[in-house]
Amino acid sequence: MKKVVAKTSEIREGEIKAFKVDGKQIILVKNGGKIYALSRFCTHEEADLSTGFLLEDRLVCPLHLSQFDLKSGAALTPPATEPLASYVVEVVEDMVVLDF
Ligand code: FES
Image (cartoon, rainbow, N blue to C red; front, top):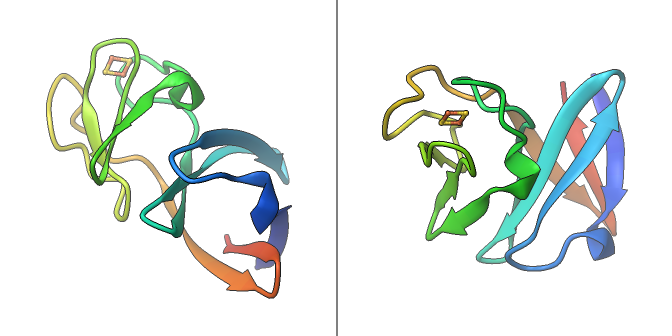
């Protein structure tokens, strides 16, 4: 199901922003001009990834520094081993639309 989550102007380059959509906690991340959508909480011990940071094309957990692939959500470094949920993002005019 497709859902409008935000306006593109709400997310600046390099920013990680939390949103709640249909009860799901997600983050939108803008990196290299592209917007990515992932689940908000780390698969290791549920740290809030909206307070994490970016390292090139990876999202870094603020608690134990696992790195996740922005595109796929894959856990690339321990201690996390499970991927984050990742969502397909479409930009329609000035809206960020996710496919859940
Ligand atoms: S809570 Fe994210 S790596 Fe531990």
